Amino acid sequence: MSHYSSIITGTGSFLPEKRLTNEELSKTIDTSDEWIIQRTGIKERRVAGTGEFTSTIASKASMRALKSAGLEPKDIDLVICATASGDMALPSTACFIAASLGMDRTPAFDVSAACSGFLYGLNIGNAFVRSGQYKNVLVVGAEVLSRIIDYTDRSSCILFGDGAGAVVLSRSEDLTRGVLYSSMHADGTGADFICCDYGSRKPLDVALVQGRQHFMKVKGREVYKFAVQRFNELIDDAFKKCDLNADKIKMIIPHQVNQRIIDSAMERLNIPAEKTFVNIDKYGNTSAASIPIAMDEAIKAGKLEKGDIVVFVAFGAGLTWSNAVVRM
Image (tube, rainbow, N blue to C red; front, top):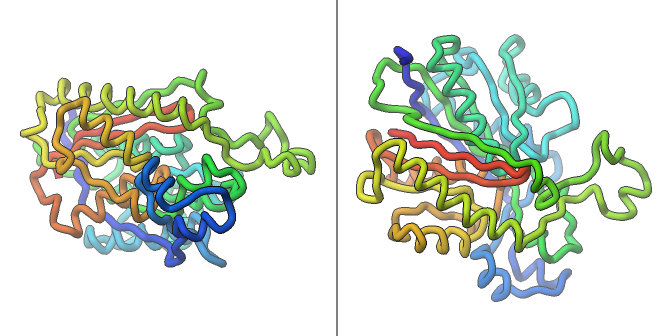
């Protein structure tokens, strides 16, 4: 057993100013505010503006997390960025973040697990801190999905938004707090449920772009079934492994996938809706950024305090799914 725990000492988030409402979308595609809200719970989403990239919004969220933790960039031993919409194919977006924070030797890498990415990153950061190798790890979830969305595809463009969230994991000898449990899973046989085609398999060329294959594609019905099933499994697993129940936890913060999916899962689990933190109505699905943004908002709103137990669950392209139990 490790002599250390990794506790969340700071959180931060950043959302672009530009809002894209359902009303605005209904002017360019066949949809309506009522139709979108009924099916997803989303009212608006944020869209990165000129000069805003995944790394720039990630850096702003990171600086806020560092300030919250009372640390300087030089105190960070590792930067992990979870993203499906990085600045470039290479180098990693984490390297851009580290550079913008003034780090010139700090290791930095990306995690590619789509909507599960932040919890994958949290799990990796937790392992580094608990092992004693690193003292402070910055874990960021950041997306500018608006640049890989097909705004002529009604089934997917209504869902996604841009944003970034970050946490600082710090070494502690208080073994009662921090990341108490986490798990990661993947099933690549469902790769075509949510995908963005171009890469070594399909190099970016004129034909690919003309066929609009360089944009993200989503099989909504299949994703819905997958998410509801995994949501229940992940909560059951977290409760069982940590001897928890709905009364013992303060909150469940799920990946902000769809209001109907969250409601359906909570109903099946017989957990009251007020035990869930949801902000999908304001930001849409921000993939890897959704959980750290929601956590930061919950803390700032006074809904999460030191000592509270929170359960995180996520599911996304890969297919991937993950959970984490944290005592704040």
